[in-house]
Image (tube, rainbow, N blue to C red):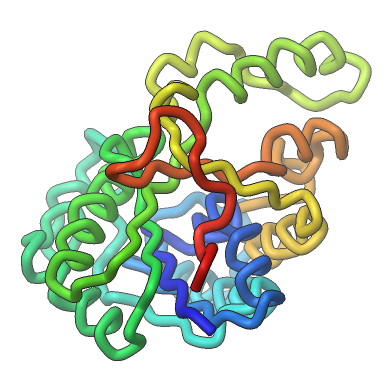
Length: 264
């Protein structure tokens, strides 16, 4: 049995980026640990969704616990930083925000967990944080340093396959009017994730798409039934989320791995 630690910026990121590999690892008998940097304090929520006086972070922590159980995580930890908001917003500069945290300090917090778990594999994000969110970029910086400090042998950078996403959008955009689902245009993909040529690991998670969607539903404050993620047709969902993509230093060129825990 090996231990997979998967590190994310906010509640709900885990199921979108790594939900399949988490459940796959669990079903194959490995230990899965979820670490989240913030409690998603600055997420958007529909009016009237929260109870009187209920803080958003509290609901998002509850949602993360529910999603973690669905995905097979046996331990859930929050590093204790505050959501930094989108890039360029005032929340970036608030004391206690993850974006403002010294990398070495935050890395020591994560490294302590990696040591406690004797982690074999760590997932972080690519150097652009997949789509440029400050907390996602910080996950990359902190996670890579934490792995150095703890001596974690395998580190995978979760990313989006830009070319794969673009191909899917071009196919499904033509059907958008029929399905009633609003498909984003391809023009916004210039900096999403990485080109296929830079990706070294592709994990087929189609057997766990139902579980992945269930974990998304657990994050109801952020992912409504009307959202693109849950409203898109099953074949579009399978194209978008049926493979989880990663980069591992020293691998490639091209896809050289299809299982993050192979041989462990």
